[in-house]
View 1 (cartoon, rainbow, N blue to C red):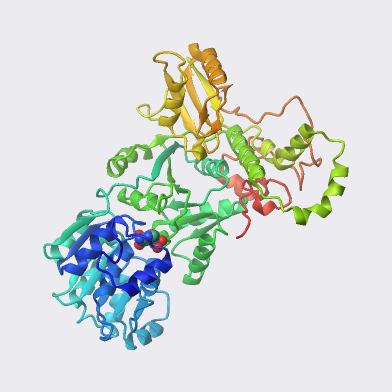
View 2 (view 1 turned 60 degrees about the vertical axis):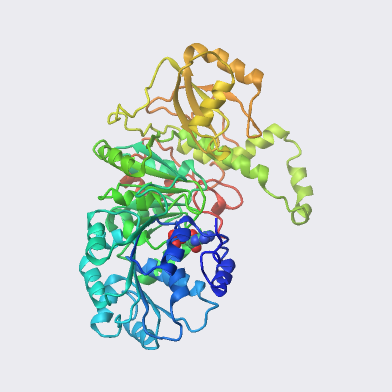
Length: 606
Ligand code: AMP
């Protein structure tokens, strides 16, 4: 792999990249930078979001442009204001050590006068959304007669958004001699038409296979009905205490509704869509970037400009109308080398869209069950225990309080203490999910995809999960390593965050238990154990109250009033509308800092 200097960039640019922590070029940068520097040929680049394409087109332009000439030399078009602002800011960062380069970003929803003033002062690089760019051309405030580079970023999205006429106008305003650089994650017919009509024998480069999704993203689908779509969404959020996700919706209304419901139900969520003012959008995006908001509910368009590299999940509340857009959505996670999960909630009718998407992303969707209440509680408990194990104790600060506390708790032995502390944190959640229904839509199961629910199988719990880098292939390998017997059938596998389930031929139930207990296998240094679990039944999943024991902690479960259970007759969590009215039905964990609870969604603000 080359360095940025070896690609032909000058030292001041390299220094700025070092400041930004860019150590080496990405694949698209390695291909595009020398190509643009050495040739005036047009360029067609297949690049997903998150591959480093902004630097791929802007660095060679910065290398070549003439800082002593104040005419507009490069015009970069992007589909959304957010993306335009982001590109403009990136370029300013890249050229901070080069004198006299000015960048102006133009977009709707912001003062036209300010933008005109900035253009009048002379900018070599203009980044703009198509609509505002055309407005400024028509007002003669933006003159593109000397343009050497025209960049069409996310060309597919610009066409999706109906900017065909604007693109034509901008292309007409630029000289024939310019070099056109077209970047797109997908190449539907409309984008090919632009390439054909406006580009001359373009050189093609790609950052990976055309239209193929990132290798770092796994794709899962959940079968739901309209009634269970929202409760299933909440369960997915509850199963993942550290979730940091974008939930994609198709319309502004759907976006606002889902966000409102989540907020009312106590999640740390907000909405991002085109009905919000620019200031509101900036504020929401700022909070999401800082992780003050954990779940962002957004339309495709509004989320385009959002550059967040650490998303754990992308959730398709509804699939996009155009399946190519699935790639854009799922590409928001699994960035910068991180792993990500793209989840799709589908009803019986929508399932037909999965196969065409699989052909585009060249990956299979894994059918995943909506977690039961018991699984959620188990996951949350393990998450808490992990946190307890890893928490740093600040001796000097707590020392003065400890003698009193030791005295008060003197009568409790270790086991009682653990039980009390777990109950304090979880009584509410356990009762919330007490009679939680099975939300999986078994009726509409696609039998060609569905795992067989087989009475001849035993379901085992295993204490390792996704966080231990377990995946189905590794789990099968681990089971095979135990030499339980020849050709044993393995059934459904459910990998969850900190633990998992697998089904295995019932005839080998005892042998499997024996093998695991005598081999004492470890997985990446973690000792592995398994247990038999009861098969989940519809309407009666875990979290049952045991033997009428009173919960520990305060009478009402540690705080406030006791909440009704998820499956109780008082409320139906299977109806988004009913839970909407009862915001306090969200189970919240207790403890010193309610905000920090994964379950209550309110994260500790950083
Ligand atoms: P982009 O595809 O241009 O939106 O870039 C995605 C993310 O990767 C942004 O946060 C960039 O700052 C970052 N990035 C781009 N190129 C590099 C690089 N060579 N090394 C490290 N990070 C990069």
